[in-house]
Image (cartoon, rainbow, N blue to C red):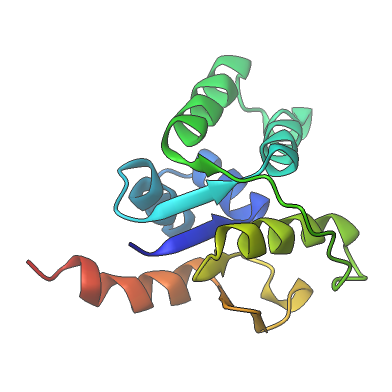
Length: 140
């Protein structure tokens, strides 16, 4: 099964628009068509960002959304500290999670913040990910 780590911006976009490409990526994870990995720091970041007042997401929606993610994702506990990304240091948590999960893909809307590849993980946008994945999902 394809192993993925999903950046916060994709999760937020999915929460704000359930018809978006990020929502399609998250739906694949929630329905276990792909295997999503999170870590405790990533889940905390999801919660912090989704709860920001300017997003105007009702607290019960945030709680339910996070419960769906937590219920379908596998939690890893990275043991390696990575400092590859200098511009936005917290993005290193996603690389740490990807490395611990041996993820095939890290899906982000901010590919400019990440290297093209990190170890065995390819960094892609939601559209790139869906374009790569859909031929495999559509097969019987």
